[in-house]
Length: 458
Figure 1 (cartoon, rainbow, N blue to C red):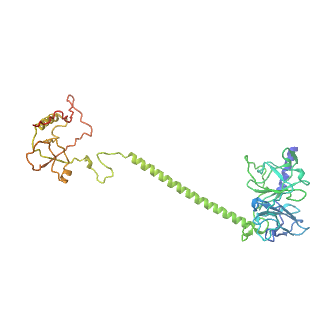
Figure 2: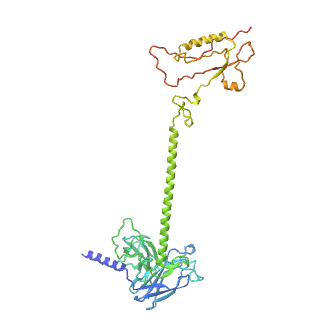
Figure 3: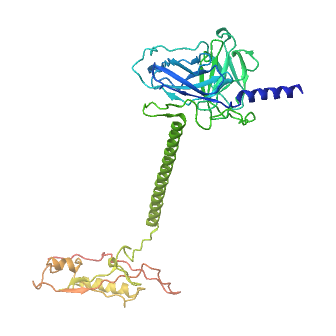
């Protein structure tokens, strides 16, 4: 029962500390934030004075060597005054976030978006070569992490703190709140501190500001993005959990970009910039995606076509009888190509017949008479001597009258007449006819020329 009541009490405290305060007043800058110039604010409406403003450096320093000269400004209004002014000791192009509060609580007047400091001719308010430090540093564990609904420990060195430290959560352009302080404990290597469960939605930009009895911000600030964690937990989130404010952020009209011409209200500037960024990113992503698809389609078409062409070339059959398949002339069935058509040869008429020729002729006739191809398919020509047979075409074009016949004498000097002979091409490229049973095979051999005798000369 006691444990249940304790949990209920803690939950009630968190809800009260994070509840959005319905502000009955507004505030705005009455002067443009400029380097080393006076910055003025004005309260409008019926708040509960006294008022105060907390100006927190935002983002990196614009000075060389990462020199940080900005400090947190905590400015209290005089009495029940609704306006205040102070010198802004920030360099030009640097950013800041302002939070206005009254007596009802921290951040009751709202939080501005990140504003920019404009340039001026005065730079005497800071030393660009000296880095400033807070009065005391604070730490967070896990280091540099804020995880949604997961306990974080805020701790500090008690020897550097005056009184009891306090912590505030600031969401630029959203709701700011005081961080509830739990039981303060001592932990080895973690000093003095307390545990805090961030009831802030993941993805939210959160600034943690530390202070003590010397004022808000004396412990410096840290910028974090709330993480979801390895094991997401949303049990601490409620409808009152702090988040970015829907509507116009506080502060009125002030610069939200380094350009002095881009001076507008926080809402319009932020919304316009976000809209342009989103549209540009969407259009760029669509165009890039389409270009990538077109490139992939073209590459795929090229490789498929190349592979198909290579496959067709490799698989194309070679027909020795039909010739080149790219020839325009279509051959009739059974017709041979130009390279396989027989051409007539011409030989000279024999002038005289040698006994040796007759002998060889007889042998040839004897050998061919028993051929499987028969003598009806073959025309034989007998030459008068062992002369070379030549094609008619080259001999005729060159004016050659005929071949020479080795002989000891010639009967007549008259040029010999050419006669046409036929060369028969055997159809032996196909399957041979089966021999009938019992019939011997005939094998044709060329003449051995071993019985040729050299003529005896007296």
